[in-house]
Image 1 (cartoon, rainbow, N blue to C red):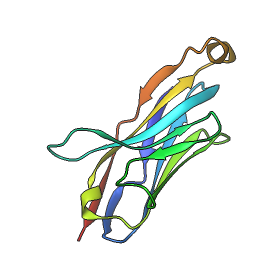
Image 2 (tube, rainbow, N blue to C red; image 1 turned 120 degrees about the vertical axis):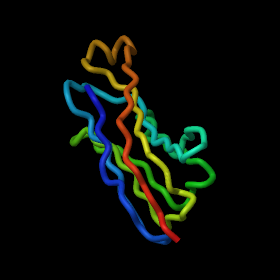
Image 3 (tube, rainbow, N blue to C red; image 1 turned 135 degrees about the vertical axis):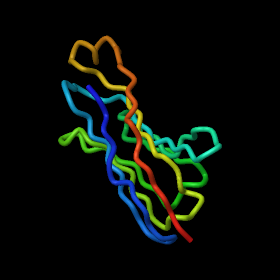
Length: 125
């Protein structure tokens, strides 16, 4: 199983982008996923997280009210809808997920931690 991000690009401040994180390969279930970002010269930070337990989501203060994380179980794809983008949102965005490849993995809580390759978001003022 691997994660592949897409949807990044250049946008002006105030604009929107929708990032996708597609899980390919043999996947039974996902325990949780998150979107992280890393700007040049800065540490990677968690922007938004989602848990399959109740479908709860949490956001960094910088993302609250502007970003929405979601997971489409039929498509095995996660999303990060980003609105009202700011220049400080410019970064490489990575998705991360803990997945179970089989039903047995899920029952035994054997989850594989995966990272995508990243997609670049550039917001101009």
